[in-house]
Length: 122
Image (cartoon, rainbow, N blue to C red; front, side, top):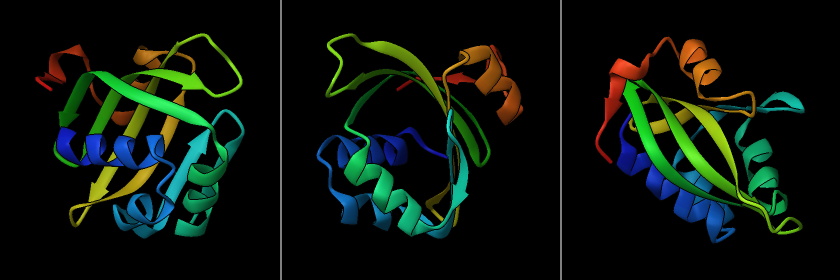
């Protein structure tokens, strides 16, 4: 998992570019967050079109095909920026799993099998 793939995904999400986000994902992508987990590129398309979120990665952790992005997140109906940690898994150069962890970086790192020692430059 590379930070460039995650940045491309963020760019697509921030622009509400459903097609670009879908092109970066596997057809069976797993999408998860505080409301649960669902699977499929159509789920991702609905999330990108309706989430109203803007993401900016501020720290990146990865090893092999997994990564965690610590991100500044802002929703269109909220003027506050919040910190979220998003777990990514890659397969064949595309994102196969994305799960947002609102419970913090430590939880996301643990779920991905990573630690602070896996931090990489952006």
